[in-house]
Image (spheres, rainbow, N blue to C red):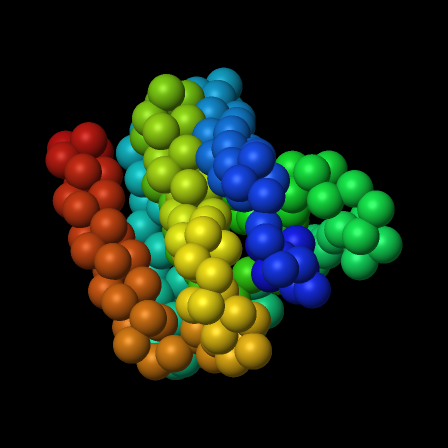
Length: 193
């Protein structure tokens, strides 16, 4: 959202709402599609759970910086020219990029961890709900900042998004993936017995 508010003294509330809705809908769509793919894959649930456990363990190790690799993403951005000419269109596109998760630069493994969980559960409705929450969470900070004038300007000057990959956030993500890994491992073991 930062590109949409740069250089604008007042951010149009409609643009911010459009941005947030696009992020939520895109996240929900990606979650539902992943749930359908899990359901239609024909892979037994126990195997999907084991794959999720292994994937979450690898992502947790990455978040703890025990191993290093770049997460797959498309690194798409909204061109500045579009922001200047059609801010509503830019807001919808940028919201969809952020909400989908894998279309922008990804610093954390959470989006891929969520996709593993949704695939393992193979429930499109649950996937849509998880994706909607993810999409909303991606848009919430920008929505909050854009609605507060002085704070928004301070946010734009400081550009804290560059500093978000902090050790504490990475560790929190790793702990969450480890917990999910243990739960899924237990479920897979019970399913196999």
